[in-house]
Length: 565
Image 1: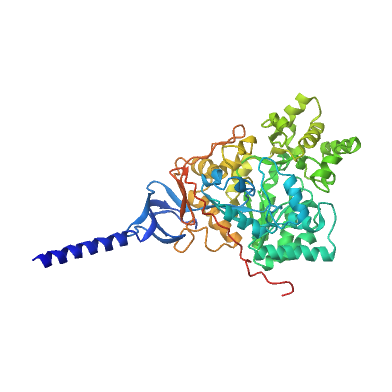
Image 2: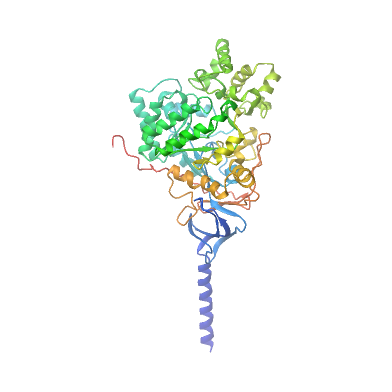
């Protein structure tokens, strides 16, 4: 009898161990959520199982248990969101937690609007170090790939990717003057693009309203983009104009796509200046005609009626040739100042004058290097000019000289009605055009555009839930699988077995932006849990401190064909 009892006890113990092992076959199981898989299809109630860094099962009911369980009843479960226009290049060096974006479910930051953090030569590194402001850091890298690996090694919460900046490549070989490359210089620029593509760049990015990027002719851009296209990359551009000459600028983007063979995307689709708000129909017609022709033309946008840049966008390009230091030195010359002031007031300039469209009362200062000038943060150019007793043009020039910087500035330029219409376009994804910040120093030394804290949450709360511009499943598609497909990323952007486990879990009833133009340092609300590569970085709305982010590389990684092949 004793042997029988012993046998039964052993059998029971063995069965219990087996059951426990079966129960813990997943690292995490997310239970009972409303699953938006990124395809745009209607959601389904179900479970998601994660093992390691991958999603392994999506089903109405996942059998067994996970080592960790998340109750997602009443919550939306979506693939992690992709920020198509990120300026987290320096903010992630300062604070790898990526607080403002992680709290909105952003799991991939895509950088490289014209300027990228590589390739750099020795002079570029010295210049970059001298221009640093509140965020100060060494620059041990020279290539774009090395910079991205540097971020990953330091520890970052989100994944990161980047385009190689055409401006960066140009400065590397030509400096910051208004010159055209000779054949040998252009060949070296093309080689730099191929190198960046082999390191995982997503393509070539441009920012053509600013010097020295604006100095590039169309043929130069076609040459660089051709190299990216041969490597599976795309062209993405802040076009030469988003205002008076937007149609000509759009034609140039389409021409670059057609001649290079690469897909193309417009950064932050907008119509700047009230006089241009009615031209959206023609912009849409031209894009859709190009798409019907077979060209892959897309766009992204942010969800605010104001942009943010510097006083660079208020002064003619010729005065900025040679770089910031040369620009500031010229602004000390009375004769040059008089000419610049006259051109700033010109009602029909041949450059993109945002001051003309926003007006001094529609320009709000966000950032100064000089602590003595920070009293002007959050105030308009009109207010500061009145206080100083100088014209708006003279005030703008004085501030650039006194601060030794471009002076961060918000420009109120766009139409809310156009924002709503653009959201409805099925080929438009979303990008913040901002860093990923935290409500603590050094970030609180500046007064950023609220898009840094609220772009995604504003879409999901105001425009999807409250105004019902598009359904939630379509918004999720445009935040996930659409940009992933445009970038050529095969294993992210969809919620299905085999994909990397980047997930955003939020309450559709409460998600909302809180940041405003007057009080920008406020986190969005409603995001409950976020996973990056299977690791939880947000739990119950609080950051876990985990930094599992990785470099996400483009389709040319280690496969870009060598010159002449």
